[in-house]
Image 1 (cartoon, rainbow, N blue to C red):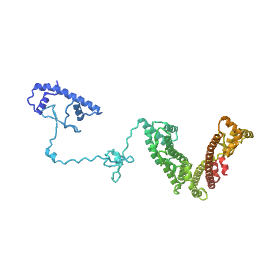
Image 2 (image 1 turned 30 degrees about the horizontal axis):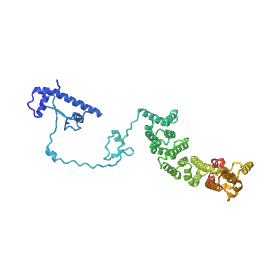
Image 3 (image 1 turned 180 degrees about the vertical axis):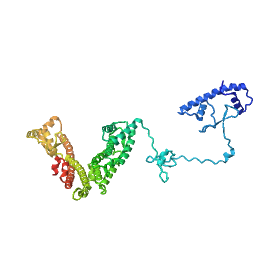
Image 4 (image 1 turned 60 degrees about the vertical axis):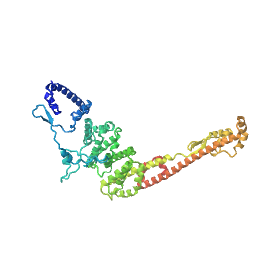
Length: 537
């Protein structure tokens, strides 16, 4: 028994012009129609599942009909759901209520706009996380509470700052919450130290790096009066830099401002007991390590950092703690930066700093202590530069060399500190055969003008016995000594250039030490190594 009634077959037959269809034929066609409908629907469901959907569409039915080599159904391409109406007088008969359209209305309807030519344009998807309201960007509905908070009191709308959806695992979320809690509430506890060790070694923390960098930037700006939290944040940054498994260089633009803030901030902490000097030193070392590690990737990184420090150092309106941080930042970048930035401005700066250090002119003990801190920072920076310059000069002062020659015609450099040859060695050299003695006698291994006259009596029988002509022997000795003379000349030029460089370094190092001693007195002498100090003092 088919679920398709014979009345449905009769209605379909009448719709295509068959009016005399008998009841027996209608009953025979009903089971076959049911079988064909089931077959098409099964194929349609397969197409739906292969498309990873749960809703059956007309496209699935058309695909099933195409698989069966049947003509697709026309007029059902709309994505809107179809609306069926029950046929009057029939309980199980439905039809689609199609609206009749007049041909006149279709002809008089205005033509649609012509499609635009294919082109490529660029526009901003988001600027600092905010999607600009331009026609190219589809409008995104924001939650009502966010929209209310982003509107001003006068009713002028502003850009809606939508949250960025970033999926991280539940374990990483708990890890991030624990790290932030320990940093803000228990910065000196043992669990926080263990968390720092985990941050420096764990290889699966890269999804949390953007969140941690934003956390550091926000909390540094919010907790400038909380010394403990600032120091904990800088220690957290150091742990991230020590982790070789994460790509921290992608987020340096977020990390550098808070680190430099901890170096040149006007005031850090709210209590006099807060050792903000140590925090500035710690942060300066972080900046130096970042420039050393990622300077080859970002070529203007160190120049921008140096410009910031130099501006803080030379600005007289800045506070003394800011000058201290700038000096420590320049010192951490190396002696070359100290020599280029601090030494040319050292003397006028000390003239301005001197009144702040004297109790007669500066009655405020706190500012006087800050001035002495700055003086100590300058002394350490200049002392470091002096130490490395003198050490480099000391390495150039190797014992003088003298050039001798060996019997094989090669130049040999003998150190002046070695002992001279003994009398026995000289006597043994004099007793050598004339051929060997000829190659070794004379200054620098120079051959006498008439070597054949010296060889006639002593070496004539030797050369005749060996069957070697005396003229070829003389030519060979001349060639060997010519090569030897060129090697000796090259070596002498190298020694001369080395001595010239040593003399230049001697002059520079001497001028540096003398000028520094004039400015700082004997306080700078501990920075000069003892072996080299006797050369200048």
